[in-house]
Image (cartoon, rainbow, N blue to C red; front, side, top):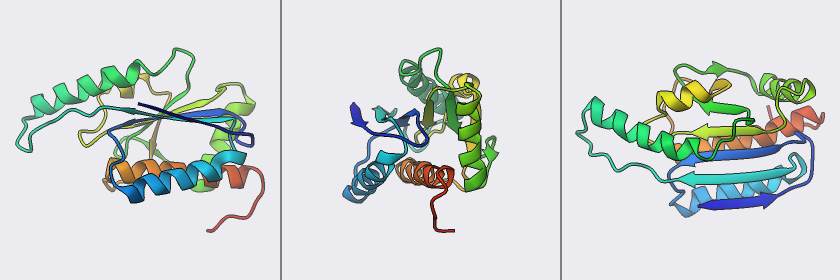
Length: 174
């Protein structure tokens, strides 16, 4: 499923979010729409791509879970081009940044031409397969807690909005 929203500029780059699973609850959909609207002045384009998640029984073995992650990774990787700067969200292995450091990191990448846009990948309930981790240019952590993947999408959108506010010198809630 593709949900593409066109925008103006300040992180001044296109942003693509690839997320495993759909937003089902109306409150997550409303929160996503709100932050997508707020991001209008901070990006040239926001694209949110949902790839289907693998149905996995609660008592799945580690091998079965890995097969599910691998199948999800195949769907994720078809949405990434060789030129994309990929940020995979991975709590345990990712780099933890403050909001100002996150904004500065994005700006530095754009200024150095290391990235012309960003692809953020959010795994499903099984996490991300090593194929996606290996393709990532940056592993990013929003802490060591485990978040529902639907909530993580909203948290990422909020942090992108906050990064835009910080990078343009606007006030933001601390």
